[in-house]
Length: 316
Image 1 (cartoon, helix red, strand yellow):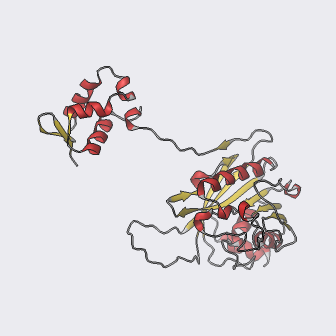
Image 2: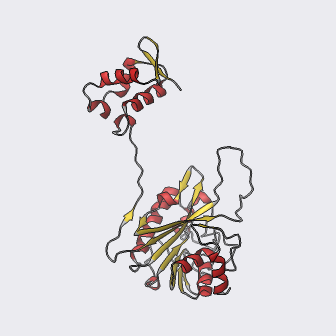
Image 3: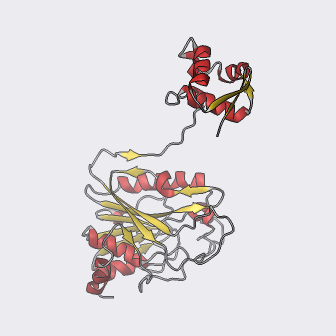
């Protein structure tokens, strides 16, 4: 496909929301999880890329796009027999060194597998794995917690190998199986965040399916996160962390919040039981008159009602 024709399509999609129903003539649409080549083309065009390096190169979509866009390309993939000559095969993204050929690229692009929850294995499915060794390195066969930990290590490793001023583009999505998982919230974000682009899903297998649950919202998009390396030595990064705190120990929770939580948990409850449920927690430790404060809170807020002497409940 001619570069001028590609750019004409991209100019019609020049926004933070991209939709390409026609995936283009690149790579193989039989390769599961393969994305539209217009995604790589958009990043090449938008960020004036001269050399693209691609991890998880798959069916060769990125290689074909780079050829048509007139930029240098090098890819790497776990598949020991990749479909293009400019894709290095047998690369375990976690344990193998970053290929020397990746040096000097002004865009590192990756569209990683989405973990075992998405049920798209590559080793042993898209290519042979007679010994099972490749399957153990396949991100598409890792449960979410392990997958995201491995992916974050890979992102940091490949970011460290980039030149100052280079970009990293990661195409990622959400997964709803065994709970809801979002790569965008869980993935590490090194360098300077340049853009979050929404990519609309087209021609996906579950399109048009009817779901029984009313609160089930079908996932019809992915994200493209664009990062920029801004310093040669220092690596700034954001790493999401999960925290848990008891509301009775929270500094941000008010006394009304705490008392309400206790009553809603217990139902109709005596004043002495409220005391027992909160005693010993930080909310009490910081106020020597905490019992008086609880009684004041019960009297002050209309959400608390005494149904009989010494018995309290919360109203809707």
